[in-house]
Image 1 (cartoon, one colour):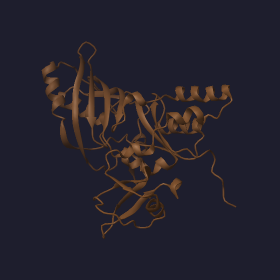
Image 2: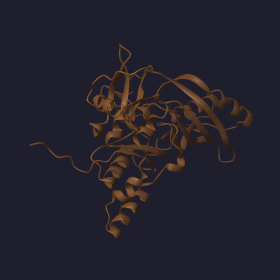
Image 3: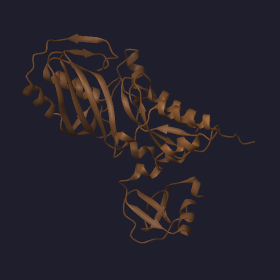
Image 4: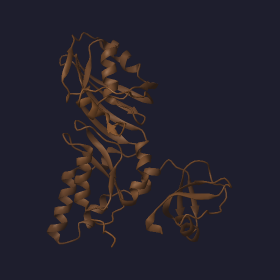
Length: 311
């Protein structure tokens, strides 16, 4: 006998405003519980210290999480100068204290030096895995493991504030996927010769999604309670906050096919159509998003990930 999935089928994306002090997985589970969703996943972890945009994909939207993982991000970060910590943020122990005597011009020049492409070694306190275990688990045991440097791109890094009295700075960073802001702050502190660590980190944007679309756990709970008080299905209010799943794919080229071709596509059959572009393609059938595809060797359209809801 087939085991029934717990929860209801929910398809879409909610831009959760993750609060400080909990893990991204904890925030995911809270949102999943409120929506009573069968399936959910997040698109790029934020540290417990960090707040801000954590896109939660429900149901069929989980098929496209990689596109949000791969997109650029924007952060606001506040750093304490003069102290270096084990984790490069205020959750770690201070391991070194040095005097801070820096002119703003010197600071600005150091900040500017991080612009553009560079190689970055991930922090040992990251969620990247080595032999199946997250790096932070090794770090907590005092074990250092090999890490590969990654190509990153800092598209912009602005110095928003320099509070010389309190030895703090605030910056806004627009960066490529896989960029560790803690590592940038730690490297900046070493470049300045005084050390530095993150004391506040807020992710304001993921790809094209604006911060105004974010909702908190409290707001979701309020919608849930409102529905209960009115005796209506929670989906009445909660699902209105969901973004269409193809909003994760705005940068992809689009191929439009007929409804009949869409059925064939959704069953894994090759669709003969003209001018299929290279790379991953968003596929729309009769005005309805049905999945992503790619061009096969014959120049025709084949499915890469099709929505089950169209089958």
